[in-house]
Amino acid sequence: MTYFAEYLTQQKNAYDSIPLDQVAQVAELMTDCWRNDRQLFVFGNGGSAANASHFITDLGKGSSDRVQRDGLGKRFRCLSLNDNVAWLTALGNDYSYDDVFVGQLQNYARPGDLVLTMSVSGNSPNLVKAIDWANENGLKTVALVGGKRGRLAQLAHHALVIESEHYGRVEDAHMTICHMLCYYFMERLK
Image (cartoon, rainbow, N blue to C red; front, side, top):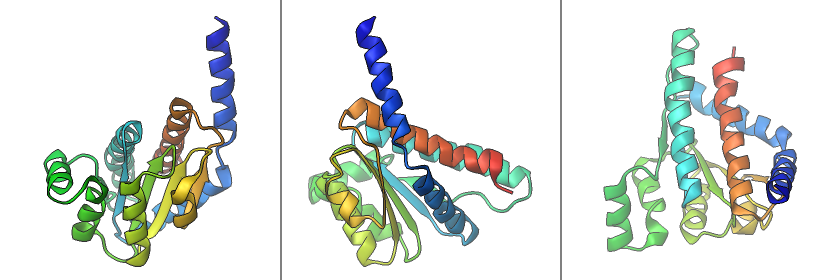
């Protein structure tokens, strides 16, 4: 029982480190993206890839249903770059795994679009390459990272840091941020 109580205490500490002012800034970026018919691209590796898919499902369906139902405007234009397995494997095989996200951005992204990536380490080469390309091509960039911060915290226009290096705790906190953002549009946007 002691292990589980300690785990929960550490998880609460991770949640307490969520930078709420920066979450609000990302909500503003997403609102601008939505209102101006821009595209939101989200991606990550491993558990962060699963979080990216979950986030886009909630935003693309739940948040879009609400804004459309209440006559607030159009649906969200959002895409998880993790979800096209054939394209991911083609880019990884023909070029390199470092190109699996940047290769998709090169086809889809336009200046003014929004890119959000999640990484506990902040140093995944494929994420770093995609954020670097996005910055060079006029996209707005956001990185959710763990306590190591890594290169992504330096590159992204907005870096939200969870003060933990524990993968599970950071990924849970990142998903909490994603839910906060989705439910902002489902419950608070007017």
